[in-house]
Length: 210
Ligand code: NKO
Image (cartoon, rainbow, N blue to C red; front, top):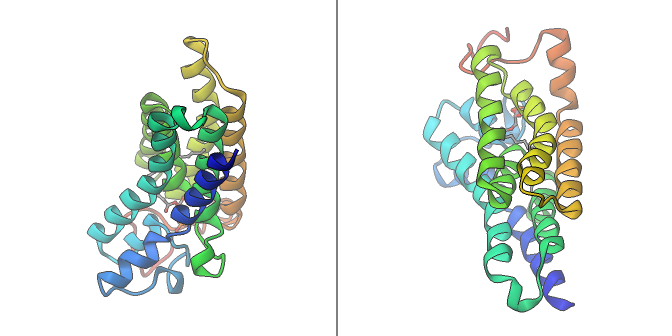
């Protein structure tokens, strides 16, 4: 039973790579933990003005959730790694992003990494959740609100996508539910700003919060 433990630790370490910090540092941009929402995430990197840096951050933060999940799914069977380990490594990568061992355990909100995990579990699940995010972001122009709505729908989509083919795994459903709850909790300041009408809009003016 050493392989599930090794896989989970490796996924946590991979998740601990805070790509918002790493990418901005490599590109010579300011540290996202010093401006805007102070969050090391793609949305806040976008507030630096560099779309390229934001996209690379989003991609790499998603890949670190996706990779451990698909590696276990595709190559785990001979090592005795089943769906329980899929759930564990996905959750471990997500937890690494929130509490990264390499960055004093001060990480992000887990949106991009959760998306990667969902895409690794099922392409349709990831696509449906990402589409939900895009629709809310398009109409309301708040990244945080889009993430919160997507997080509510993700567990529902999992049950639909897997239930239809009679395939829902309790461990995976629980992992998705835990990610959704932690993601919402990490957005508590965003929720307060949304209620107060002080949340910054996507593509909005950086000078005046409106
Ligand atoms: O700086 O506090 P901020 O305004 O930056 O940021 C709030 C934001 C933080 O998240 C990010 C990552 C942005 C990724 C955008 C595309 C993601 C596609 C949607 C996936 C939703 C996954 C939810 C899964 C829950 C289990 O929110």
